[in-house]
Image 1: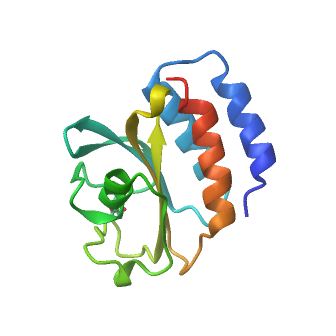
Image 2: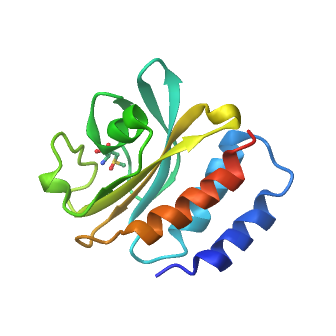
Length: 150
Ligand code: SME
């Protein structure tokens, strides 16, 4: 289980002064992924056009390259601007399975300066019901601190 205070402090130190979104995403994906053995795939999908996400920096097995806002858990987070906590991916209509071992998922919208949607953070777990509101709150706070001014 992540110690989110330590993780946030480590990410804060590593990202200090950096404004490049891809560099920030790569750093956050790496630190998140290696902080918690629940996290089996950790990465970003970037907004690259109207209603369109494209894969960004990630850790884990290959992820699908392109996701329209109309599809998947990532699309739902991008479309609604709300965190998606999915305790059972097989029960989520339109879930996109990049790995057959994924059982649960959390996806958070990522907002840049002025509240502009710049992408989503997707974390998959091979464990059922791996994520809760505490994860959502802590991860959202890290994303706000890192990307809120980009
Ligand atoms: N499961 C996601 C797709 C991304 S892969 O899991 C990395 C979704 O349903 O949007």
